[in-house]
Length: 117
Image (cartoon, rainbow, N blue to C red; front, side, top):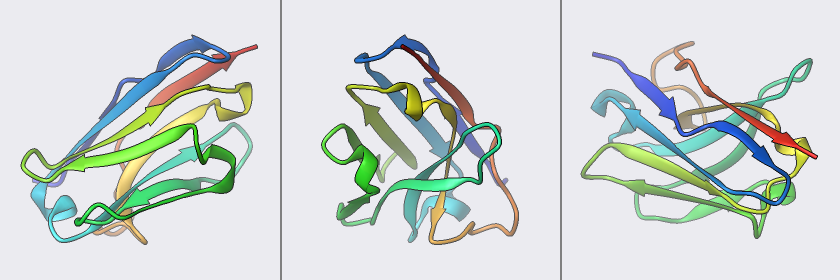
């Protein structure tokens, strides 16, 4: 069964923190780098961070030093710890394999993150 289930979003004030989780099916998670993506209203989906199976990571410049991506290979789960949140971080956050969806055009429902000023 193909599955991506994101959770952990919510409404938070600027400067606050959230931890996102994504439970993935093995067909998506195993052997793949996993990424967090986000899509703000009226904008295209963008890559936020990714992590390889061995733990190496990459972050977009605007979140460096604030966000931390990690994965639990035993649980097929990827996390995104978000600290010092800013209003411009407001978006729907999705996880998926990187650099492209392991299952063509398949995305989960995402989790909404709203940061108030």
